Figure: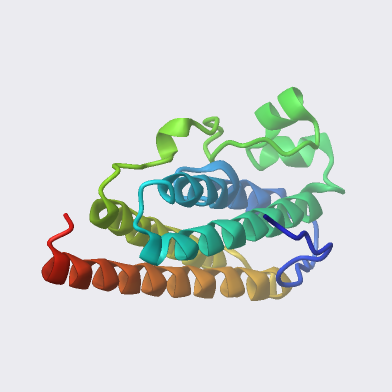
Length: 189
């Protein structure tokens, strides 16, 4: 189903080692509104969504996986030269003790990823509204991370990701309208 191109969707650069910024980015890696949760949510929902919009969920789920790869790259680059004392100071001491420099799916507070983040109701309209909300929450989180960052190189990539969340939200809104039109004309739901 997928073809993996061995490059990031958008280049990731960082200006310097910054474990605190990496800690913030972990939210988008394994948090409730992060890229992993989004990819899994959309991939799961596609089984109960009408054929008219199933391709949209597949496409966006695939793109979310590429965003997950970008976030992982950012976190790695921001922490690869950090000393244990720097990680501890940034609030990543517990992570270091459990995982060393390996990435682990948890949120910025250190709470492990859970399948409870993957919402699926089975009602196409309800699921699409959930997806719109998820994209808007991710957009807001990216903005807040940008607000906390003074790394202009990294902010460039974060702005790209923030803009993609806006595009995804708009696409899901279009899907709602497509399905509502069907609902009105065919009384499907």
